[in-house]
Image (cartoon, rainbow, N blue to C red; front, side):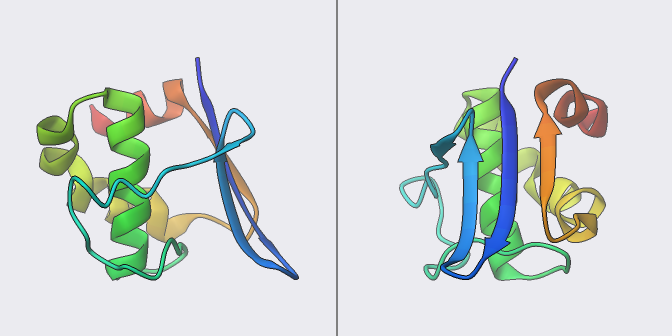
Length: 94
């Protein structure tokens, strides 16, 4: 199962999936073209929610269905440094 992580560094925000940079998935939808954010509700956290869900679910339409709720329940409540497992993502979607 994949592990997603994010951290704030002196060089900026880093978000990875299994230690590889997470794609923003702008080809699916652009909520914020400046990248990812978390710990609040907004366009950049919404972009992160979409990117995680597209990668995890492997279905852009299904990801769009859950993006708003996932952003509000999970992404908006993450700490500065965080990890999410696939199991945690699945639990948040049910």
